[in-house]
Amino acid sequence: METMILYEKEDAFILIAQHDHARISGDLVSAWQSQLFHSEERKDELAYAAYEHDSSWIDLDRIPLWNDAANMPFSFRDFPGNIRFFFYSKGLDHVQKTSEYAALLGSILYTTLAERFRNEDTITFVEREFARQSAIIERLQLDVSLLQLHAKALLLCDELSLFVCMEQPGTPRNQYEWFADGFPYWFDRTGQTSLIADWKDETTIQLHPFPFKHEVKTSLSYKEVSKADIAVYGIAEAYQRAELLEHKIRFQQAP
Image (tube, rainbow, N blue to C red; front, side, top):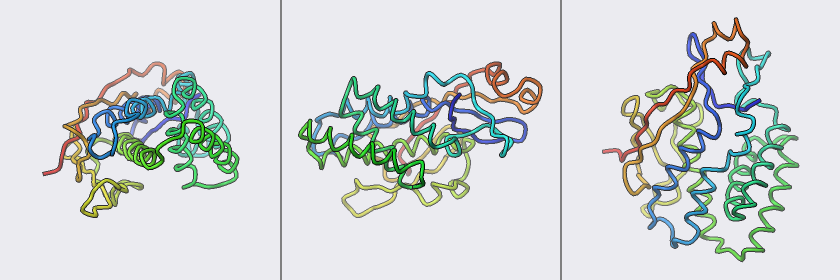
C-alpha cells in the first residue's frame, strides 16, 4: 500500500510516489545558497534529510489503496493518519541509524506539518517526535540557530516539491489550494516574507526570491493510471501495468 501524491485528470489519475517527491526536495536543498546559512556545518546531512525523509514508504511503493468514499485512490492528504504517522516514525528511525541530525530535521518537518492538521491521530505522534528532537539536540549539543535555518530550508524545499506534484504542470498559482499566496520565506534581509512560485510553461517554474546557487534541473517520476484500466483490473493491477513516466522540471529566478 502507499500514500501517494495525486491529482485527477478527466480520464486518469496521476500518481506520484512519496520518495520521488522527496528526490525533488533533495535536488533543491543541494543547490541552496550557502550564504543564506551562517555556517557550512552539517549541510550534507541537510541534503540527506531532504532525499530520505520519505524513505519509509519505499517498501510500500507497489500498491495504491482505493478510497471507496471518494471513488479515487487514497492520497497523502486523506490516508488514515494512524497508519501514516506510524510509517513516518519508522522512516525516521531508519534515517537516524545513519544520521541523527537528518532524523532530527525530518522529525521537525513532520511535526510542523502534523501541527497544521492537529487531531487525535497527530497528538501521540507529535509528542513522541518532540521527545526524539529534544534527545538529539541535547546529545549533539547543536547550534540551534543553524538548526532552525536548516529546518526552514527543508520545509520550503519540501513544499516547492509539492507545488510540482499536486497539480498539472503549468497550472496557474491561483488555482493551488495551498500555495496561491506563495510560501513563507525567512531568508531575505530586506524583509521579504513570502516566496512566489509561478509556472512559466509546463517545464519551468520561476521563483522570487531565488534562494538557490543556480538554475535547478530535476525531474518528476510518475504514473498516469487510466480510469478505464482501474475499472477493468482494479487499482493495484492498473497501477502495476502503467508505464513509469518522467517529466523534466527547471527552477529558475523570476525576471
